[in-house]
Image (tube, rainbow, N blue to C red; front, side):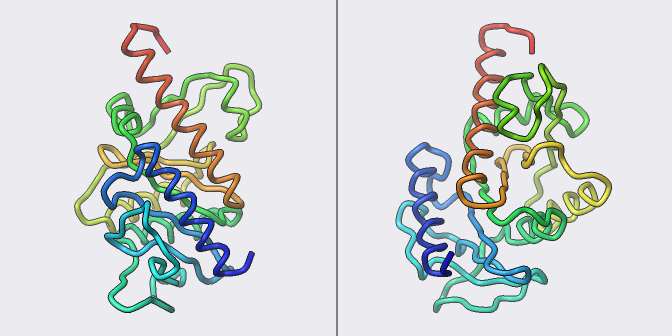
Length: 207
């Protein structure tokens, strides 16, 4: 996809996520690889329903800015995107959003893992088993985002998540995929799992 079209598609996705309440204020960030060495990422502090081509910054996998409109800086969470692109070759698009359900589910984690509900929906996340036992990694939140990225880097070096996503406690969820549509589907399915867990807790269903 042409670089300009890629940014337009990211901006369209951001507007959709903002309408769902997942990117309120200026929260969240999106990125897409344009080559094996570089990716576009949303600029810091920009309202996601108003993104234009000038609200994206080109960064390489070492974190160096390659191109940026005036006064635009890459998202503070660029380091997290770099870690994922570095460890997951098939990841070409990454979405990071801040939903209420994702942040509530962080409280359900045990020992840095959130057990996802054994739903048929997990097939869309690459888990074909019937009633599988799948854990989503949950990382501690830090004011210094580089520390989150370091924790994620160390964990992913040991083993990659079984599903294409990760949760940051009291912060938000990150999902990725091989293209825009796949990454979107992965994010939607994780959010479905989060809503299921929250509602199951509310009515006393054991998951």
